[in-house]
Image (cartoon, rainbow, N blue to C red; front, side):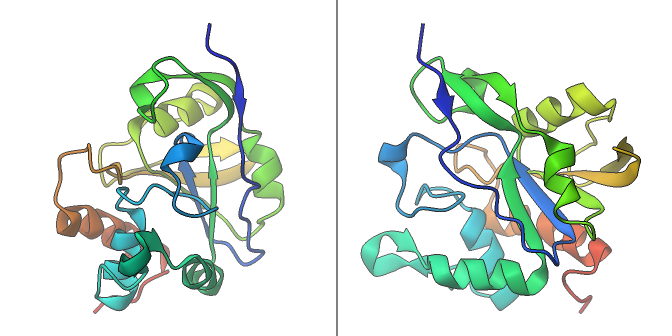
Length: 195
């Protein structure tokens, strides 16, 4: 039986957060290129954010060092009020890799405790199928169709759950198409201005 792995990062919760991004769980440490969320250099999340906020998918990528510009990413998230954590805080990796398909959730994240620290937040985005399913199990929420949202309650607070395509390169969709889903969501919430 694989050993239980606890979440290695603290939740990133800027007090002005209006959006909470929830993945499933970080990849194994050997795949990290920085100490922050979405740390795998092959993951497209920070390229999506570069495209959305700067019109340049490499703006947050430290190409020379095969890493990301962590300080720039954190500044961007603080400026726009975006919080990040994962739906699991303890897992077993059944295949020893980063695939959600082989993650066994041992302990779920206390979502009400996260939300109590970000009172302006009324939108949650799940950045993959596993995170959406894990969240919906406990709150009676419906997993929305890709790019859409559903409404549910957490500790009496009405929340909108958004379902986005996975930022993993294993998910077969072009960067520009993934970014388009994120853009539509962020425009709806008001984090990005309509052109």
